[in-house]
Length: 246
Length: 246
Image 1 (cartoon, chains in turn orange, yellow):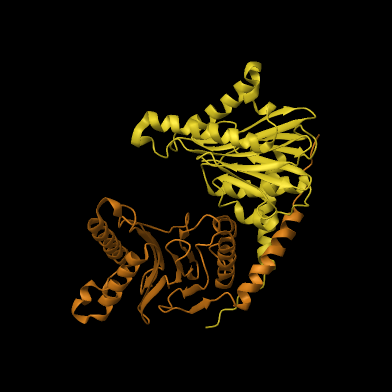
Image 2: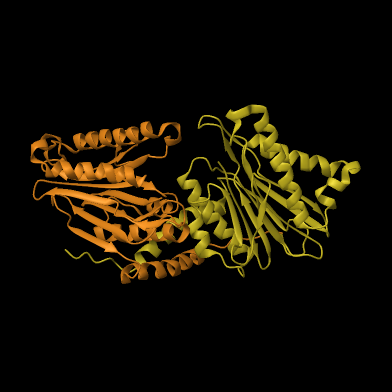
C-alpha cells in the first residue's frame, strides 16, 4: 500500500507521501511517489500516487515525456490553461493506462492495475488547487468542507488530521501534523514505510518553497515519534476518569 | 461495519462494541453485538461479532438455544471444560453457518455471509482468555505480545490503543482508552455508531463486574469526546516545531 496526504491551507499547499511499495511482504522496495513540474513564476504542478506501481509509473513517465517533447507541447501539463484541464488530462491518462493493462490481462486483470492520484498546484492568476483523481479518470476538488485528501492506507492517520487541521495553520504546524499522522500509520501498518517525501508550496510561489526527504534517521521525525507517545499519554491522563459502578 | 475491541489486563478482561448495522447507507439499524453466558462462581463467556448480521445472529441464537436445552447439555458452552474447547465449538458453528449460507446462494454468496468473533471469558481454575475466531473457524489467542483484538473498522482507533495500552492498567483507564478509540472511529466512519456496549470482567469474578450501555447522551462519553479534542491539540502544540529551511 501507500500513504499520501495533500492539504490546502490559507498560505498554500502541503504534501507528504511515503515510499514503500510491496508485492507480498517478501518483496518490498522504495519508490518515490511524489513528482512535480514547474515553470518558475508561472505554475507548479505536483502529483502523488497510490496503487499499482507499473500503472502509476506509466502515467508519470508519460507526463514527464510530454514536458520534454517540444513538438507535443499542446499536450503538456506545462501548457494547459487551468488546473482543471490538468486534472482532466491526468484523469484521462490514468483511465487509459489502467484500461490498457486490464484489456491485456482479461478477467484476471480486474482491479489489479488500479491507482489513484492526488494532484496539487497553482497556475499564475488562479488559486492553489487540490484534486483527488479516481481510477475511472473522474475527480473531485478540495473545498472548505473537505480541505485535504488522503490516498492509500488512510484510516490510521485520519483521526489526528480531522482533529488537528486548521486552514489558517502555519506550514510548520501542518508539517508537524503530517509527521504525527504518518508516524501513527507507520507504527500500525507495514505496507507504509520510510523515507517520506515532503513538499511545501507557498501561495503564488510557483516553485516548491521547501522539500525534504525524511529518513528514519531524521532527528526531527525521531523526536516527534518519541515525544508524541509521551504527549498522548499526558493527554490521556488529563481526561476525566471513568467511574466503575459495581 | 462494526467496531469491537477485547483486551486482556492483569486484572481481567475489558470489552467494548458498537451497535450499528447497515446494508447500504439508507438502511441503518441498531443491534447488540455483545452477548454473554455465565454460571456465577464458575464461568463467564462473552462473544462480540462483526460481519453479516444474519450469520452472527444465527451463531449467537444457536449458542443461546443450546444453553437452554438441558438434553443437549454436552454441546453447551456452559458444560465445556476449557475456553479452548469453547473457541473450537464456536469456530465450528461459525464456519458451518457461513458455509450453509454460501452453498444456498452459489457463487454470488462468496464472502457475503462472512463474520468474525471475539471470544473472552474465564472458567474456574484457569486464566481469563481472549480469542479471535476467523470465518474459517480457526482462531488465535491473545498473548503478552498481542494482548488485545479488534474486529470491524479497526484502523482509525488502533494507533491510540497501541500507544495507550498497558497490561497493568486499571479497568478505569482501560475503559477511558476504549472510549477514546471508539470516539476517534465514530468521528471518522459512519458505519460505526452509538450506543456502545461495555463489559468489565474481573479476574476470578465469573460474572460481569460492570456493564454499561453508553448512548450519545452519556455525559462521560460527551466529556471524553470534547476534552480529547482539546487534549490532543495541547499535546500537538507541546511537540517541537518543524523548521522550514528555504
